[in-house]
Length: 303
Image (cartoon, rainbow, N blue to C red; front, side):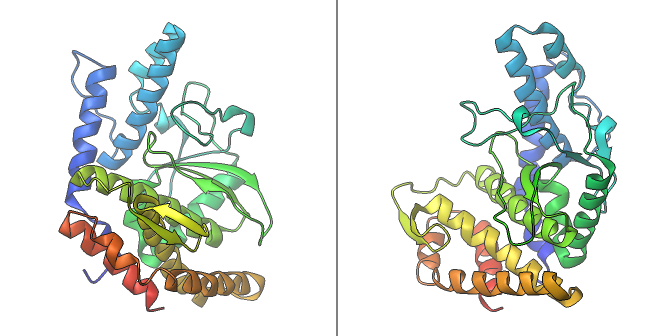
């Protein structure tokens, strides 16, 4: 696999997207033909999960109007709120933090697209579009096309501040993140979170069950972590390292210094996992997936 695109092109994930989307549509639209949304399978997969979560919440609340809306909009009406980008139409939103509830489905706040969803202000949609272009130019277009379909922008912070970002398994293809108003930094964090979505899909698609008794020291968390979290970090952070090494060539001033410091920090942290990573990979039963995880890790380790 000579390119990042080849690494991210993983047929089991494509099959997972097709199969799970079909099953979701069969649940929320029984006795009907699968809807034709006009979007690609990865986008359909992401949006179908929003429709499923919204329909389930409406059903539990006895809200028939909202339930009917979701069954009539298997794409959560994403076409109305979409933003054109280099990797395809994306849903870019910036809900008020009070609109991000916590519930048993997630330890972190989240947002489900619905009838009251509004697109982010134009300046944030423009910021996102440039960030997607920056990621694509660095070779990460395929990753973001399939695994960063819905972008939920949260707090605006300053360069150097701690930025919170996350994904949840119940809403694959969706990312939640703070930002500093700079597309180069936003692209880095998009790649990180899309990477988490990718590996979640890859593990599901291959049926890999990682031994939850195995723990490894995480330099990022400064604690022992289960193999699942350790492998996630040893995939997502190397992706941002590869992106940052590319982005440094086109930056100057404070941004350049910020990215250079980030890359130096990540080199040191990743080096601390060199002894444990091969042992953690032994827990991955699918050879093709193991090969991809190892390839990205080794490329980053060599920076």
